[in-house]
Length: 227
Image (tube, rainbow, N blue to C red; front, side):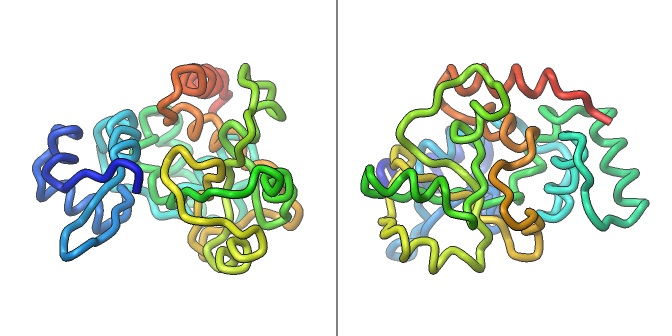
C-alpha cells in the first residue's frame, strides 16, 4: 500500500463510525488488507468511496449490478428474472444511475499493479481484459485522452494466469495497471469483448480522484438515455 490508514482514520474520512467501516470492509465495499491483526485501507480508495456518496439501500449483488449497468447502457442484460428486471428498471427511472452508484460497489474489486511500460499495450489487447475508465473513454467519445496506463475488468478465475503472463507486480492507486476483478458468477462479457458497457465506463470515470476524469464521467452519466 502507498498510503495506508487505519479503520479509525477511514471512519473520520467517511464520517462514519469505526463499526460501520468494519462492516464495509467485511462486505468488500472498501478494499483492505489485514496486517499484524489490524485492518489497513488505502487512503485513495477510502476517498473514492467517500465520493460515491452515502449508501441508501442494500448493495446490489454483482450479477444484478452488471444487469443494471447493461440496462443503463441500452444493452441486453442477459437472462434475468422478469421481476428483477422490472425492479432494476424502476430503480434507474426513479433514482438515476449517479444516485445508485454506491449500491453498485460489488460489481468488481479494484486491484492495482505495476507493469513494464512496454507491457501495457499487451495488457490492453489481452482478450481476458475488458477496458473501462480512461482506457475506454476515447472509444465512447468521452472528452478524455488516455495516458500510458490500463484500466479494465478481468474475471476472478482468469486472474492468476493474467498476472503471471503480464508479469504484473502489486502496486498502489498510482500504479499503471488497474484490474477491476469481477466475481466469476457475474462475469457475462461475450468472448472477445473489448469495452465495458458505456454506463460502467462513465461510472468508473466519475469515481476517479482526477478532476478531468470525474467531470468526463459525470457528463457521460448525464447523457445516458435511461430506460
